[in-house]
Length: 123
Image (cartoon, rainbow, N blue to C red; front, side):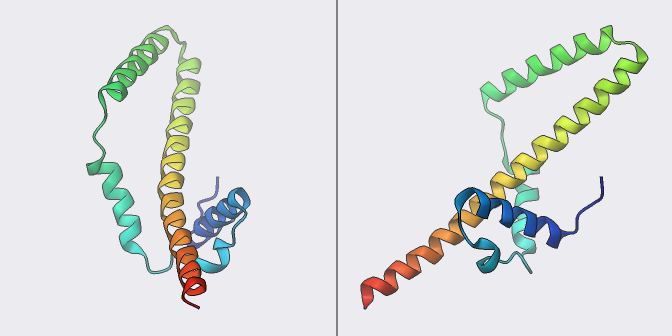
């Protein structure tokens, strides 16, 4: 899979948001020069998230099942399972990043809409 540039990723994300919410964020929201937003996501993912007891329990169960599977695999199955696991991790990362950035986009969209409403009520 070819690596996307930041600009391509941002455009794809905004198009996806617009298709879901029938908005025009691709025209109105720019991620350019927003290193703090990207750094905040990285920091949040690495340092700020503290797993809940429920998450810890699910994680332990997940690891136990994975270990049982790995111990029963042939070498070929082990390789396939490792690839499967890696793709699952990539999907989880994609999902978390999209949710984080969608939160930002929603906040910006709400800010834009509230400015429009304030202008209309002030006239």
